[in-house]
Image (cartoon, rainbow, N blue to C red):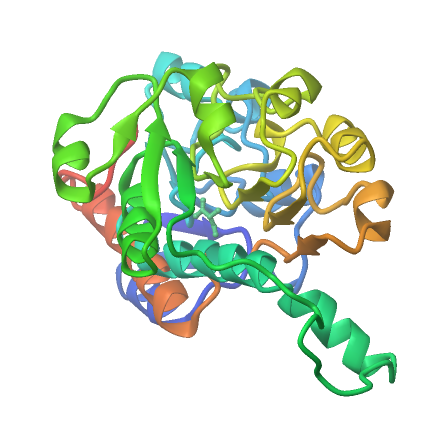
Length: 317
Ligand code: DGY
């Protein structure tokens, strides 16, 4: 029977499926394994079921040539060196589609929470500082009529735009290439990057991390945004230069930020932690029971298809 290594416990639905088709080697620890621990655990395995915390780079693949499939339990795959995987003929799969709604929901939640100052309000109540509402108390802004900019109009970006439309927001977007069908369906307008930055009341990053997107949101970019604008990032942390974001917030180049992902995750820049106009969530984009079950099942179906020599349901490489 083929051996399949599972780097960290995933929902039972996925484990049960894998165990029916292979000898499953599951990490005994409830934490991310170190590189050495993972190397040991997956010795002799043809498949590695990995999470974003596992850096599967060239050296890893060279050291474990028996691995022929890396099945990521995530839609993103920036933790895997795709160039090396291609070169060594290692397949890589991900879990697209099943987490679109959950991630779009969380993005919309951050947008509304920023506009309506929800987390600030929660802190105020807990600090015993709520003295009763009054006409000028904690005023936020309506989403209606505001411009939402989507950086990365893919599946998740479109799902965020759909939600925002129902809150009366107008949609602009920036992508590598314009997406005419999204423009028709969402009445979205494509803008060049500089114009895009200046047009947004809220700018939501839903792009994947690539060499093109890494570090795009730096101090220069924040300078082009509106002082009243909010930045939301549910894509990948390193798309934003956190040091520059802290400076931009200190210099009031933008009004606030809602972050679900971090440049040096799980570390968070201490400057962000001190700022009251920043909402910090711990990479919860796909964190619902339903979504994680579906992600685990999809990852398992990729593994099973591989073991049976069939086409993978969601193959990246
Ligand atoms: C992914 O799947 O890439 C997400 O970041 C996990 O929530």
